[in-house]
Length: 257
Ligand code: URA
Image (cartoon, rainbow, N blue to C red; front, side):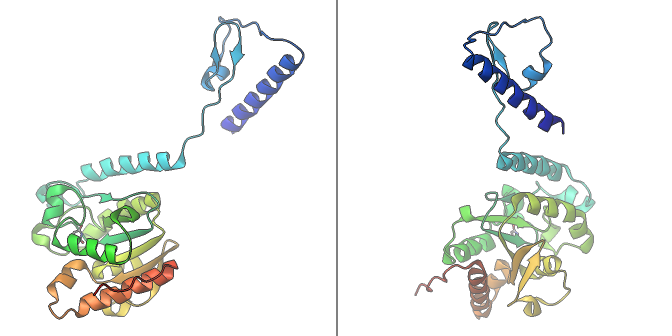
């Protein structure tokens, strides 16, 4: 309300000054000792003789979100809700990529390489994820990478439901600020939590879900693809990426031979 009133005042002042100018008035006497609170707040500048109104440019919403994301990152870095994770982590691993990314890839939890570097998906599984992303025709600049929880569980054990619950609010706020247009859940933990269905991954794959209004596809975790010598999980993951690309309305790139 107050801002709308201030904008109104600026418009009235501008109209008044323009009508004075049209009438041939070139200088407006200005009393520097008079209170100038409204004009000062609005960025008015004066040289003591002419009052020129300069409107403060509206804030870029992306910059606002970027700032809020930086605040959230700090909050996450200080979190001590899970005492075991807090006492064993090197650092928290928040996420990486641009705001409004085309696709958000959601893993489970940082591993040892991520814990050491503070970045998601920088270990062996992350390199495979990079190849999957490239095969889809994206670069890392198109995607936002983050995890359900922000601390490495000791010995890379699966995170407990309590730990996932403790991180849930961080995850939701991060998701709302980044606003990826599509989501991919990597592995069963992310797939179950984002679909809200307590089913094996095999049952969750192959369909398009919605997470908070955003289309979501579930697939294998890259670490699990790495472990599967038969290549079956790799082929299935590619089927899932094709489903993602079709859902996005993008062409499916031909497989490289
Ligand atoms: N596995 C994950 O789920 N996330 C990472 O960031 C790295 C490995």
